[in-house]
Structures are given as C-alpha cells and as structure tokens.
Image (cartoon, rainbow, N blue to C red; front, side, top):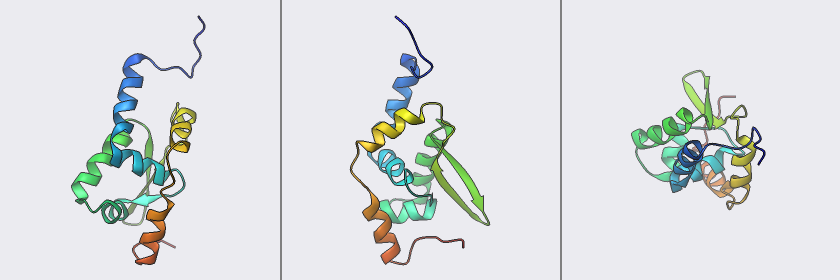
Length: 116
C-alpha cells in the first residue's frame, strides 16, 4: 500500500477531528473560509464570552488551522493557507452549510470590524 504526503497518522487525524468536531469551532472555521474575523466579531456572532472565543481560537491556532494577522490593535483570524492538510479541511468545510448569514447579520448591526 502506497502512502502519500496527504495522509495523516491516526493520532494526527484524531486530533484534527476533535478540533473540528466542536460545533462552535467548526462554525468559526466555516466563517473564516471566506472572511477574516476578529475575536469581538465571534463574541457577537455566538453570544458567548470573549475568553471562551479566545480559547477556541487558541486551539485552532495551536493546531495550525488558523493564523492571526495584527492590524493596529485588532487581531484578525483566517484559515491558514500553509496548513499542510488545508485541502482536506477545505473539503470538509465545503460540505458544511454556508454561514454567510452570520457576517451579513453583523454588518446589518454595524458590528463588522473594519480597519480601512
């Protein structure tokens, strides 16, 4: 049996599946598939505390799935294009229903952070 660089060890796959099996983290990843977001936007979206959102983001960042970009005093999170298994992650996220309504709702409420 041939292995390719796209295959993951059982431990790595198990860890990845644990990361994305949490509904909040999976939703965050789906939102980040097409948008950069800051912590305060996720707090508003999920109506949970900033420390809880930060914990979710830390787990995703530690797992290599997301990266952060500082812009002034804001830190924006997005999917990490350098994640070695990003193609597989994109496949999973493509199978999840759109979360664009969450961003549209933030925009309507005037809560979308813009650093322009």
